[in-house]
Length: 140
Image (cartoon, rainbow, N blue to C red; front, side):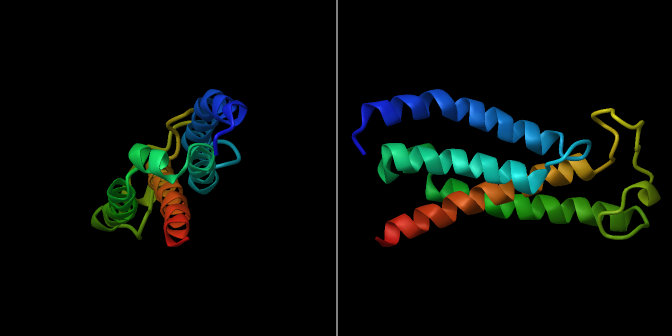
């Protein structure tokens, strides 16, 4: 697309969309949101970049191999956190039973492993959205 207005607005708005997506991911354990919705917002921001600037420019920002590494790494991160609960003597992804600090209500660090789990889920959702969108565009 060669529309100057769309490209300019996209350049202006994408950082705000990404900051909001990161906020949703990081505060998902104490407010509505979390890894899936924050990851979807982050993925949508990169899809917007692809639509405004084209696939070639977007592939430079987020190459396919980086997306694949991020997808695989996010799943491994999720599994590793789940196994910590098992090795601590609880169930998969257990928190309090494994002895993790739960904190006080309304504190940012009050949910044990949940904030770390939402980081992995957010990365997985965002990278999957981008990979699927770029794969669809490549096939055209």
